Image (tube, rainbow, N blue to C red; front, side, top):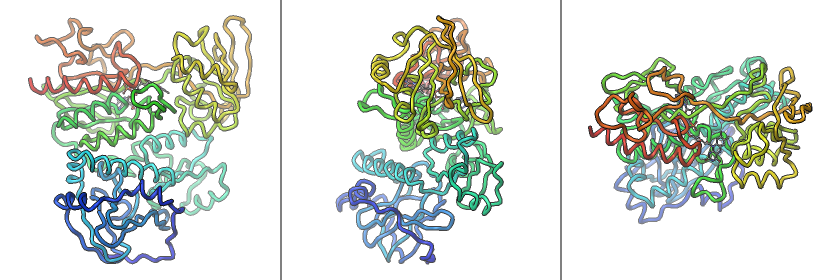
Length: 558
Ligand SMILES: Cc1cc2nc3c(=O)[nH]c(=O)nc-3n(C[C@H](O)[C@H](O)[C@H](O)COP(=O)(O)OP(=O)(O)OC[C@H]3O[C@@H](n4cnc5c(N)ncnc54)[C@H](O)[C@@H]3O)c2cc1C
């Protein structure tokens, strides 16, 4: 296919430094190219020939043997040349692992000789050759970070900081690592021109423009996922060895271990990978990350790792029932679909608890938040904020938000933090002049109209109340298990967490004893925060997700 595009619509990306180019586009040496030749097909292309378009899915990578190719971002018909690749350099990005749509276009700059490696060969190389696998994976991840940082892709989101649906959509795209250009109607006077171009009324926002053509007005997560084909390449027919419900740390760990040990794995996630950990600005106590890592980055890496081993991860789909078909099991989904697995790992975690005040829901997303990431932080820059909670998530949020907000009030019900928060966080809070701790304090009232405007809290010891003009309130007051969808088909404890192993008692139906993480249904396991008695930590969730795979092998061998 040859295309000579009009060069009037082409612009250059902000210039890459040679160092940036070298880390984004490492050069394969002659020995590596010779090694890869056996897994690829030689291609001779003409000048201006398109190798893949923005939006093409299920294609491989191209290694330049001679000549050059360019990677081009396309938005609203305007092309931006992002990089030009020469001998030894290769195209590719994390979409190569998932089979999703390409975010960029790739074109030959001149007549060139290339080596094309398709997705299945690429995945095999990444699984079997540690050195090349590492090189590809690092380059793919860095390129996705670059695309996100430079908003390169096929999505424009028009929203408002006064709209809770805008925050939901930004969170969904961000957590799925999907780059987008954000235009805020409240800040950008030129937005009207874009709205007019697509006949959009201000009341329709948030509006998502996909591929410069499809206009979605206030779309759901499922509509957004469908528009960007986030679930492209997933084949749900047949019976999986293992279905994992939930892609938080425990579910992603189960997917990585299951797929890397040869199991045919499907993960079903109602929102985006990362779970609760994904809403953390910085996790500092997870082994191997001495400088800390944001929950989002940890999740993105785990997601790519699971896909590298061949796990399929279905986004924006919620499990709503578990049925036993003697065996296998069927997981019924909210879109009417159903998937079958010989074994199931339930890794659906827990959901934040709400404040017991009548108008909480009125301000969710417009003043009340349950996660503290860059998105929320950018909304409260220079303002005072309040955080409710005495656990590590509240402590992390306080330290993180202190870097953006004018002042942070940390409100806790109890007399102090020592019983509920890690020492390192308490020390940082005590050392910060930007954070004020209020103990024995409860929120009494929330006031505002379209947005939260003020908060009144009360000291339960002195009985005195204070009102503050605070427009941003972060609720980090613990969580309840996501077990309602199971409809009582598994043994639960009094707080509705799933019982496993010896805790099941006489609800266990078989002669053999249950495995450590097995639920009252044989072959169905529960891991992470949803499990009764679990330690609510990333490391333990990851540990349980990986351990459960060992027991899955046991059940599959029965
Ligand atoms: C803000 C914050 C900061 C934290 N910081 C730390 C920290 O620094 N260190 C630490 O060790 N721990 C920390 N934690 C705790 C840690 O994040 C959790 O213990 C961990 O995420 C639990 O992992 P999980 O996989 O069991 O569940 P979750 O993280 O809750 O993930 C469950 C996933 O399942 C999905 N799901 C739910 N129901 C369904 C369904 N029906 N169908 C499909 N999918 C479903 C959810 O969307 C979610 O993605 C923090 C928690 C929070 C909220």
